[in-house]
Image (cartoon, rainbow, N blue to C red; front, top):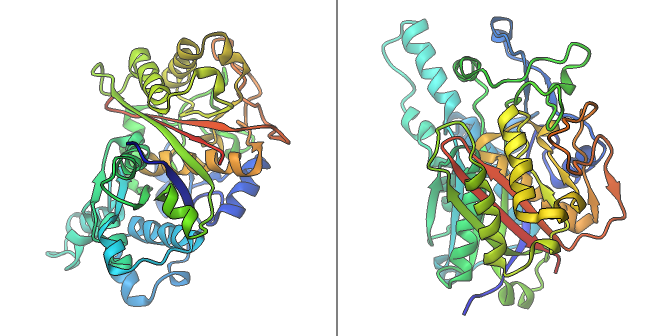
Length: 410
């Protein structure tokens, strides 16, 4: 028997705010977190924009903790703390055995990696920080969260590029639905805005050109004049609980996760596949046992790259048919940038907040619609007072991994 799974807590660290209230207020108002890069190396880059997080570690951690936590792990722990407090969780020793952590991460401790290379190759030092390995390893975020709350159930890190945290949430959902766990903290974190990373993405030629009038308008999903993605950073964590347990303890009930689809394109390492994306959407709908015409909102992957926006539009049309034109769709990456390993979790929280507030955030900077991207992408201005019962969040990654999450109002 499949068990029902509720979302009972949310926590976020993002370029648009470090709690869900601030985050929601900014994205529904169409306020962008994209700006000029603050680092001193920005003058060496051709792409001088990013979606950076305003984050003071001392607001969350003591001096000793800061010394051994890479920025990505700080983000993850801060987002998990927000979700834990939001859910008002309290677990005894036995309950902790059936509670776990699944986190999505793309690059892991990128800042620690960069620091080590600077010390070795630029400053000609003969050693790096003693705890560098612990700061760099991809599974550090999940492990630190598990340690912080004493969760002794499954603890896994998923790294599938842009789909990482959507996969983490989907797999955590299955753990509870299929009876292997009762409570899961799931999400993702990324902080990789370093000189080496920017140079690598520049070489791939997918970064957006800076808008000459306003840097904050540089990310233009589904626009005819879109020029590429804007890198971002952040973290998001949700608390998932078996429904009867959540109801019994009087937990906040933000939504019920009802479906998850995960596929691989098996096609190309960077180019998306219409078949892979549409099949992931179809599998999520099949898993939820609902028809396409019951979906009221889609948070698009919407990276603002030429191929992704076109293929995602086609995938939605393939699955939803004529109903595709009736569904409001937004790419909030236009405001918080592409946070890679954290993207799916941040955008899933957007979808949950759509359910909670019965309002839809816009796709900003959509002044010149691409005629081939002709769906309702909620251009520039959000919508209030809408009726939304079921939401979908798409995540389509380099490497060809696709992950789609479905949730509905309780």
